[in-house]
Image (cartoon, rainbow, N blue to C red):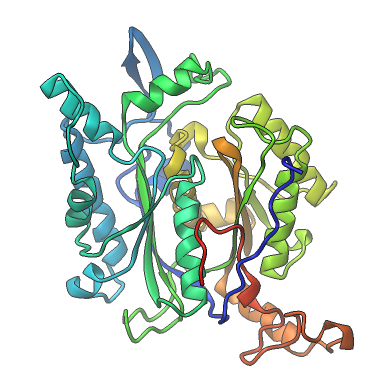
Length: 413
């Protein structure tokens, strides 16, 4: 049926764990992950206004002096590259060769608008946005690009996760980006989804560029990374499709719940093992009500604590996966942030996008994963489990991570 979440899997040939080695974050909250986490803890809201057709909409802008659109992109890309490479032990040549995965719902829309304003006509050819962005990042590869509405950044992360889990690549950069443009703002304004003020329900959009450096080992000969920092492992990343509506999920939340349950299964854990949930939580009634129902279906009366960022960060659309994930990890990497949320070890991260796109991510502290694997390695194996990807594997994994995959945005041979 159209409204049901797709459940097909991409079966990987290997079972390599994928770690988050470094994070980087630039948003309205700050020009680094640490600065953004500090601002979030302090309850800061750097909200401004963006005018469109005579209306000034609440807006979370990047704290930059640059006015030129591409100059802002280049500045932020250099900041993100510096944060990702700092302390990672990667040479400039090594960083330039890292496979690059980018998610965005708008990509070069702002660049096209800039050209149109200056010339009085739409751009006639290529804008070389990829070339400009990669040059500022210091990356010389041809990026994999994903645009699946608000799940774009997690679609990029999922692609890297799957390829790394298969052993196709050992390291990767996964980015989510969203920069100011009137096309996006006008679209949401036309749908009547923007909040009139910061205190009203509705969307308040924002800008961000955030990224994660991923590696498949705690010590990597390729990257010389000595240890994952801030010490998190990606245990599941599953994209699904809820075909109920172009702009809203199934009202009863069952498609979202199916995707959440599948991600928990991919990670080999139960709902009770989750310590903290980062829901989509967009303050649009149709999405929020469906998500609440889905979380109730998964957790019942024992809902874990939740954290939401969109009223401090803005809804950064295609960047929201990496932007909110890096902010969350940076927050939990501080003593105050970890204590506020009772030192969570397993996080569930949920996103909902237009076009029926839904995504769930599960990350675990590396130490929590090691402890769980040690327990599972000694679990007796029932005869009827053999051959189903559930028996202990070399290395002590009690469940085959080769089955970790959601509905991929691409097909692997």
